[in-house]
Length: 264
Image (cartoon, rainbow, N blue to C red; front, side, top):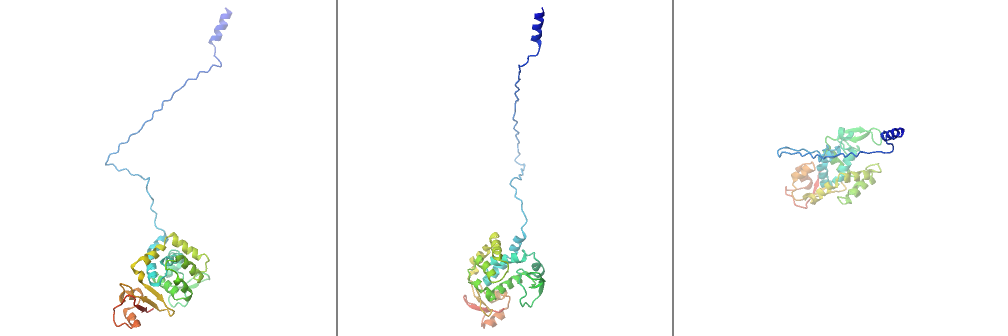
C-alpha cells in the first residue's frame, strides 16, 4: 500500500528537466494605403525647391559698373576685367570709405590733384585721396591715370585680353605695394568670370575703334563706322566745336580711318 502511495506522489509532482516551448506565430499583415488624388487637386512638393539667395555685394557691384568698364576698354584699351577687379578690390565692392564718401573706387591718391580731396589712413596716416562727384568720374580718371603715366606704357603693348599680364604689370609698375596684388586680381577675374566682358568688347562692332595716347598726353581717335562729331564729343566729354578747332576741320563729315585729336 505504501509503495502505491509513493508511486502516485512521483507521478503527480513537477517534471524537472522537461521544458515545453510553445511556438507563437505572429502574423504580420501589411496594409497598403491607397490614396486617390482628384485631378483637380494640387500636390505641392518641396523636395526640389531651391532657396533663392540675394546677390552678393560683389555681384551687385559688377552689374552696376560692368558697362562703364567696357566703355573704358573701348576708349583706352584697358581690359574691362582688370578695371572691374581693381574696382572691387580697392573699393571693397563699393562699400569702402573712399568709395562711399568720395566716389573713389581705385584708391588713387592726390598726386597734384587740384579737385576735391579726402583724407584717409592708408600706407601712412591721413593720406590725401582724390574725391569725385560721381563714380563714373572715378572710372574715367583711373583710365587717364594709367594711360598718361610713362611707367604703365608697357601694359598697353599686351594683348587686350591678357588680364594676367596686366595684373602682374600693374604690380611691377608700382600701382600697389601688396605683393599678392596680381594674385588677388586674377582670382577675382576668374571667380566672377570678368574676362567675359573683355570678349564682349573685342567681339562687338566697336572693335575697330582704336585709341592711342601719345607722349604729349593727346588722345588720338581713329574714326570707325557710325562715329560722328557729336557722338565723339559725348564720349570724350568735350564739344563738337573743340574737336573741329583742334583738327582744323572744314566740315562735320568724317571718314573711316581718319585720325582725330581729342581735346582733354
